[in-house]
Image (cartoon, rainbow, N blue to C red; front, top):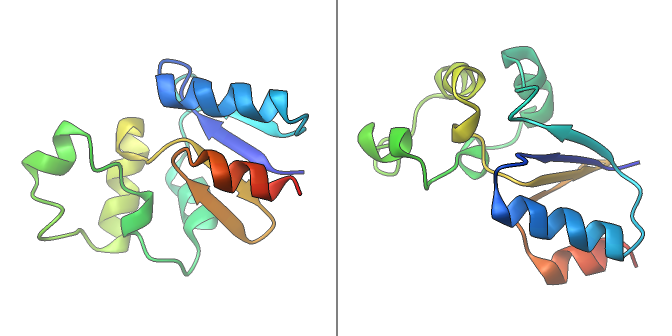
Length: 113
């Protein structure tokens, strides 16, 4: 069963969640505004993957720290994301070994085929 990580205050997340419901996709849900991911959970989720796709480029922290030009090392990024859930890109749809970052309606529709 896929896991859907979102923030209830995020309009894009609400669109993604509505599409999953429309498509009849049963997914575990985790509202990161109510239950943020811990550093250990982030580390397990990210695994050996690159850190950049997990960073929310639209946050003030991302811009203030110049993360586009100088992305943080993985451990530092995980610590920052654990402290500030807004730094985690969302929504995330995690299924087996694949992760969909953000909301891409075409990708969401393909995942249920």
